[in-house]
Every structure is written in C-alpha cells, then in structure tokens.
Length: 150
Image (cartoon, rainbow, N blue to C red; front, side, top):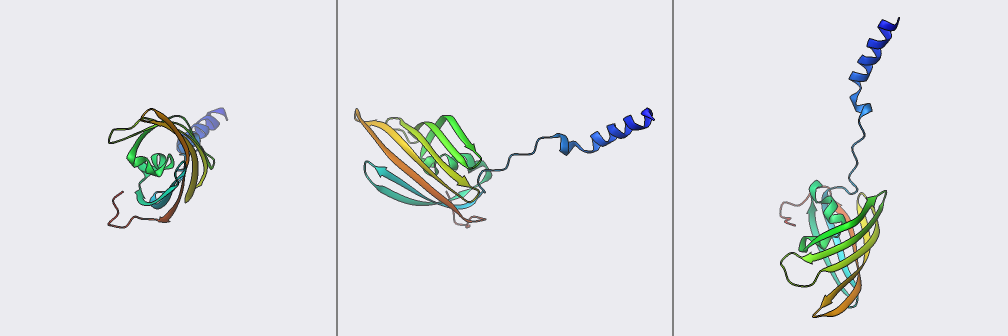
C-alpha cells in the first residue's frame, strides 16, 4: 500500500506547481490612458491637467506622482498596498537647477483612480518654502490614442 501512495502523492505534487507557487501580485492600477489633475494648493494655487499613456512599467512611478516625468524622485519610505499610498522622500528636477524638494504624501487608490495629497518643502534662493500639493487621476481608456506621447 505504501508503494502506491508515495508515487501518487509525488505525482500530484509535481503536476500542481501553481498551487505551490505564490500568486503573482496584481498591479495596483491598470495600465491605459490616464488623465491627472496636479494642483499646488499652497503657497500659490495652480492647477494643470495632463493626459498620459501608462504602460505596466510606468505604474509604480505614476502612482508616486504623475508629474514625476519632470522630476527624479527617491522614496526611502514607500507603501502602495491595499488601496493606500504613503510616500516620503526627495525629488529633484530632471533638467537640473533648483534645490531638492522634500515630499511626504498619502492617498488612496483603486485600479482606475487615485488621489494623493502631499506636503512639500524646499529652499528658493536660501529662503525656506513649504506648501501642499495634490494629484487626482483617473483612467479614461483601456488603450492609448495613437497620437499620445507621454
């Protein structure tokens, strides 16, 4: 009896590798064509709407702030999980110039939308400047228009 059970169990284990492997993590947001509204809430109010084609490779960076295609950001403290976003780090302009910007933000997301509000702080000509910014984004289409170019 033992000689029959062991090969059956071994065969079952070998034919069911998917059950033994951890499930692949689902992307927090879906790739596609996204619209985002980026606002500087203080000290001066501004607002800008952008449309971007988000590929699977762009998802994490986009969640860290859609306007980040203008900045290089590093977030030593980062949580994007279970509908919650928390980030803390520093951003610098890609094209050079300007002091680093400290960023601490939090928000919420679904697969087709997200909202982040952040505190920002920097120095301009040696004068400390702080403020608040927000990003609200939503997926407007499954695929990107042929003419879209980030």
